[in-house]
Structures are given as structure tokens and as C-alpha cells.
Image (tube, rainbow, N blue to C red; front, side):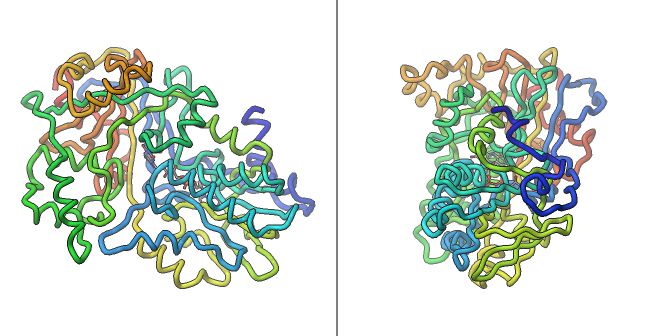
Length: 482
Ligand SMILES: Cc1cc2nc3c(=O)[nH]c(=O)nc-3n(C[C@H](O)[C@H](O)[C@H](O)COP(=O)(O)OP(=O)(O)OC[C@H]3O[C@@H](n4cnc5c(N)ncnc54)[C@H](O)[C@@H]3O)c2cc1C
């Protein structure tokens, strides 16, 4: 089944198609992330393709990934995940306690919520799913398999939510991933989906740390990990930045700044807001980078369901008899139960109202948890403007080299020469300090910048030309002519 046949009614009167009641057509809502074509920079370094995200300001995410602020318990996530009157069911990465803010979490939450619904629903009940991201798609897959009639409402004009593969063969030899894409070894469910759907991925290889003065020693995460371990023994939870300062970690040191920028780019929370008891991962290892269209995953999971695109839900009314969904267009539709998978940022906003209001425990959890900011920029160059080569990076070696060697027999992709390389920008005033060089894995000059926390918020506020200038400026230590 192709995506076109699956997504009936994309901006074309989906409700009228699906339901017997005649309803006005939902207005199409263009997806806010985009692939602009800015002008060449003043520095005369000009990518042949450029794509950037702005999840922080995107009204259907209002952030990138949930995080646990200092002083907040993970039990807030359990509270958020608790069904209300067996009518409202909650999923999404923010409801997961094991690895919130990740692909793994979203998938697991979708599986969990489907089991909860199946446990109470009678045969043939009509179930609505709000949101066609990974959690909504995973839930839908299970509910359809269990024989329920499932209708998915997605506000955007595409499925995938915070996973967004930009497929454009002319500009991108591999799809540009503007949202979540990197997998850790714990992402077994997603890894199995990629394998089944024949989506290629590559192990992320060695790291190169570079300042304006040249290569610097790789920065060890060990002092950060040791400080976190000590902080977790304390009677109260404090912000990660305080824990690190207390342990003598110099937060002004350029190497530590680059290391923490990478941590923030992965978690979305700055060290002065993140919890020490439930901290971000200090140095992810054994990451894999999918190099194919992740949209295929959604086609697969949503197969058999009715999916309405450009169909934002603005109101959820519920009582012991059922649920009524109010659409942004003014119409309302009745279901037996609803699975709500919208991001935490949306729940924290005013775009989705509940009648009656959610229980205090849910509202408390929504207010307590934090929505992190992560932004991404992809650039492809016809001619490489970079001084660094992946071969040089591989020779440098780093902590991940052992992992690569250990996996070499089992994994054909583990050849360091063919693996994307991580670049860390040390010192200076770079806005984006964490980069992935995909050249070894793609044969094309493609670099991907990832930025988190307050810097991501700043990046999201830039126009496309400013974003391009910030990206090129951040890469100065790696350019052949800085
Ligand atoms: C830039 C970036 C980088 C990331 N990097 C990684 C990474 O490398 N590895 C990793 O594991 N994770 C990463 N993540 C996190 C990961 O992408 C998310 O945890 C995951 O995709 C969330 O899935 P979800 O289904 O919970 O939410 P979503 O994907 O956000 O799905 C929710 C859906 O609800 C829809 N919606 C919102 N409001 C409404 C409404 N009113 N009515 C109807 N529909 C609505 C949204 O449009 C969306 O499609 C990253 C995220 C971002 C943004």
C-alpha cells in the first residue's frame, strides 16, 4: 500500500469520507518545518541544499522532547499516562519513564496504551487516536490488529510528527531528517522495524574535537558522569549545572562547554534546568543513523486505519458514555474512547481543551514536566569546504572506537571509514557545536548540525538566511578557509 492510498482525505474532506455525518472540509495546514533555499552566505560558502527545523515554535509540537526538570519525579510521567474514566488514554514520549524524549519511548508508549484500551474496550468499539506520530502510529497498529475501528486525527498535512524525513532525490541523496532519527542500542523495536522495512542505517563512528587553533584532545564525559553519580546520592535533587559546579567541573572550560552542548543537543534541556536524579545521557555510545525514508515506518504502522490529515483536534469532551472530539473546523465527532498522543508542549499550551478539565494529577504532571528544545540543520555541498576528513577523524580515534571494533564482525556497517563522524566545535561563539559528517556513509558532502536548549530556541527564531549564516559560522574551525 502506498502512502497516498493510505492517507485518504488528506486535506480533502476526510471526515465526510469517513463518517456518515456530512461535515465541512478541514482546511489543509502546511507542515511548519521546511526546506528553504537561502541565498549564498557572505563568506561565499554556499550549500547546494539546505534544510532546517523550527520545532520550538511549531504549534503542533512547541518543543522537541520532554525532559525531567530538577526537583520533578518521574512519577509525574506515570500520572500523565493514567487513563481518565477509561475514556481518555494518554501516550507519547512524555508518558514513558524509561527513556523519555526518545523514539524508543514513543513506540513503547503506543504499545502500552493500545494494551490498556484493548483491556477495557468491547468488540467493534470506535476508537479515536489524536496524533499520527510514532506513539499514535504504534497504538493504531495494535488496535487495528485487535479488530477495532480506528480513526486517526493528525493536525499536520503529513504523518510522522517529530520524525520528519524530507525526501527530495534532486537535493538530498539520502532523506534529510529534521526530527528524531538517531537510535541507541536500546531502540530495539525501531531497529526491528527498520530491518523489516529494509531501511538502511549506519553506525555513528569516531569523534573529532576541534577549536580555531586545530584539533584538541577528545573531552571525556567521565567527570560529568562522576558528578552525576555523586549528586544522585544527595537527599535532594538539584539542577545538573549545580551538581557539576559542586563537583568542581569547570562549566566555562571550552571543552566542557562543547561536551555539554552535545548533551543538550541530545536531551533538549540545558544543564541549569535538567535534573541530576533523572539526568540526560552524558555521552551516548553506539548510535545508529538511519539513512532512508522513515515515513515508510508510518505507512506500515498505520495500515488499515483511517487517517485524517490537516485535522487538528481542539476540544476533547468526555463522560461515562463516551468521548466527543471538537475539530478546529467547528464540527464534533463521537467515539467510545480516545488515545491522546499530542506532545507535552501542546498539552502545556491552550490549543487543546478538555471538558471537564483533566484531573489535578494530570494537570500537575503537565505543568511540572519540561519541554526541551532541539533543532537540526542539514547542508549538502557540491565541493567540500571542509579541511577535516573522515579519515583524519578515524585516525584520531576516541572512546567509541572500542565499540566499533567489538561490533565489527556482527555488523557490516561498522567499518569506521564508512561511518558518519561526530564533529565537536570547541571554543569561540558557535551557536551549533555538535555536527555529524555524513560524507563517509553517503559519498556526498553532507553535514548535519544539532543544537539544544536555549541555543536551539535562538536558532528557531532565526530566519532562513540567518540560520544558514549561523550554521556556516559555527563550522569555522572545520572549514578549509575559516
Ligand atoms: C530535532 C529533534 C531531534 C530528535 N532526535 C532524536 C534522536 O536522535 N533520537 C531519539 O530517540 N529521539 C529524538 N527526538 C525525539 C523523538 O523524535 C520523539 O521523542 C518522538 O518522535 C515523539 O513521538 P510522539 O509520537 O510521542 O510525538 P509526536 O511525533 O510529536 O506525535 C504527536 C502528533 O500529534 C500531532 N498533533 C499535535 N497537536 C494536535 C492536535 N491538536 N490535533 C491532532 N494532532 C495533533 C502532531 O502533529 C504529531 O504528529 C528528537 C526530536 C526532535 C524534534
